[in-house]
Length: 380
Image 1: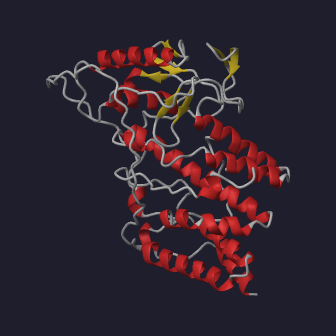
Image 2 (image 1 turned 30 degrees about the vertical axis):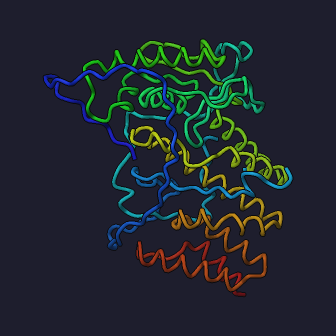
Image 3 (image 1 turned 180 degrees about the vertical axis):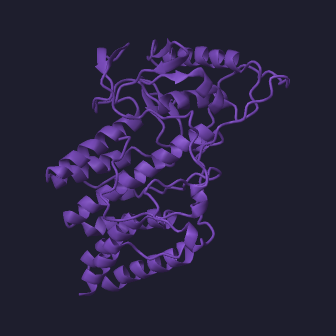
C-alpha cells in the first residue's frame, strides 16, 4: 500500500542526485507470496471487500497457466465490482494502511480527443483500439518498451528514469503533476535538485520515445506532463478494453465470445505488474491494483467457462492462483464448481472445508451464505 513520503526539513541539506548516465535495462521479475495476518478478536471482525493488497515487500508470484497464456484454439483496466454473490477476506493488517491521497491512478476511459503524433491525428482517449501499432508499452509484467522495428525491448535508462516512465504509463493520457513524480521517485529523501532532475529524466525519455517512433508523445501541460498512448499500444489499456468487451458479451449471453475475450485479456500478462519498481510506494500501490484486476478478470473468465461446461480447463489452471490468494472466496467457489462438474465431489467438498477452516483460524468467521448454499446444493 502506498503512503505519503515525508518531505525533508527545508533547512536540511541533501546531496544532489547525479543525472542519468548510460542507459541500462534492469528488469527482474520479483516473486513473493501472499501472507496471512494474525488472528483477530470479535471487535475486529468485518467483511472484507474484494480489493486485496499484497505486502509491498513482495510482489505476488503469479505463475500464469500455459493453457491461459497460450490457449489451444483461439482472458479494463478497471474491473467492475463483484456481483455480491461471494465475499473476499484478508488479514486485518492489510486494512491498516491506506493509499496515498496524492496518488490517484487514472486508468478509466476518457471522452476528450487529443492529437497523438504517429497514431493518426485525433484519437478519442479510452476508446477500444485493439490493433497494435508500432511502439508497444508494457506494464503488465516488467516495464518494457518495444519499437516498431521488431528488434525487441529497448534500454530504458537508469532506475529513476524507468520509474518516471512507469508513473506516466500508470496514468495514460492523463496529467501527472511534477510533485507526484517527485513523490514516486524519492521516498522521503527528496534532494534539493529533485525538480531539475525530473526535467532531465523527461528530456531523456523524450529522446527515447523519438528513437522508437513515438516522438511528440510526452507533452508538457501546466505543472505536469502526460504521455499520449493508444489503446493498442499499452498492454494495460488493451487489457481494460478486452475485459470490458468480455463483460458486455457475457451480459448479452454471448458466453463463447466472452470467454475468448477474457482469455485474450489474461494472455497479456507476463507476471506481476512492475515487480522491479516496487520499491517506489506509489508505483507499488498501482501495481498491486493491477494485480488485483488480473485476479478479478480470471475469476470472471472461470465463471464463464463453467457456464459453458468447460470445467476441466478451470480445474487445471486455478490451483496456483488459489494458493497465492487463499482469501478470495470467488476463486474457491469456481474451484468447487469445476471439481463438482467433473464428478470429483469429494475434492470439491474438501475445498470448502479447507476454506472454512482458513476463515475460522484467521478471522473467526465462516464462509458467506452464498458459498454455504452452494455447498449444501452439492450435498443434496
